[in-house]
Length: 332
Image 1 (cartoon, rainbow, N blue to C red):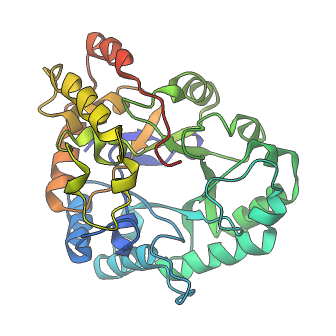
Image 2 (image 1 turned 180 degrees about the horizontal axis):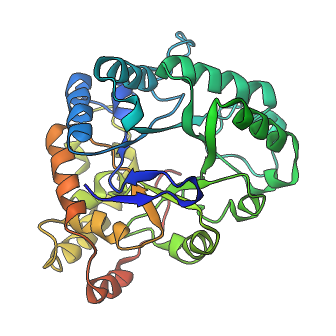
C-alpha cells in the first residue's frame, strides 16, 4: 500500500481508502450485499495496509430506528475487536437537517446545518464509532453561499478546540466540484470529497489547481462511476429489483455506457482491466490524497490495492483519456 499526505491535515492516508456505505446493509442502495462479507473485506483492507475509512451518520439510517447508525456502528465493532483505532484515520459526515441531497440553492444554512444539529450529529457519531475523537468530519452537502454566514464557523472552531473533531471537510454536491472554493478561502475547511473519474474530469479545471495551491486534501469518490467503469455492465437486467443503478443506467444510458467502455477497454495496455486503469487515472494526479471505492468483497479489496501499487499511468495514456470525458449527472 502506498500513502499520501491529506492536505493540511498532514494525515498519511492510504491512497486506496475504503468507502463503507456497504457496511450499513442499506437495502435502498446495496441490494444483494452480504454485510458479513463486507465486514471481512474491511478486515482484509486493514490487513493489507489500508488506513483510511470513510463513513457517514446517515449510512443505513432508518426513520423507525433514529438512534442507529449502522455503518459507523460496524466500524466501531471492528475497532473494539481489533484495537486498531490508532492505526486508522476515520472520516464521517454530518447529514443535512432538512434531509435534502444535494443542498438546494437559496436555502439558508440555518435549515441545513444549525449549530445544535452539528453538535448532535457529531456526538451521535462519536458514540456509534466508540471513539473519543473523529479525525475528519465532513458536511455531507454544501452550497458555497454558506461561506457568507458566521455561525457554522464559530461552531466548528469550538468543536475542534474541544478535541471531538480534529479537522473538518466538505463532501461536495454531485458533479459540482467547484461549489466550495469560496468556503475554502475561509481556511476552516481542510478537505474536499468529490466525484472524480475518467468520465467526470471537470474537477481538473478548478478544484485540483486550487487544492494544489492551498494544500487542500482531496478525497475522490465514485471512481468507477457506480460500476460503469467496472467494464462488466451491459444491461440493466443485471441489477436486482430495488438496485438504484437500474434507474441510474436506465433508458438509452446503458447503450451509451457500453459503447464508451468498449473504447476504453481497447486502450488498456498499462492496466490489466478497466477498473485498474480507472483507479490509476485518479492516482496519477498528485493532488489526490485518497480514492475511496466502495468494496463489498475481499476480492475487490485485493484487486483495488494491487491497482494502486502499480502507480501512475503514462503521460501518453493520460492525454488519451482526456478524450473520454463524458459529463452528465445520472443521479437527476
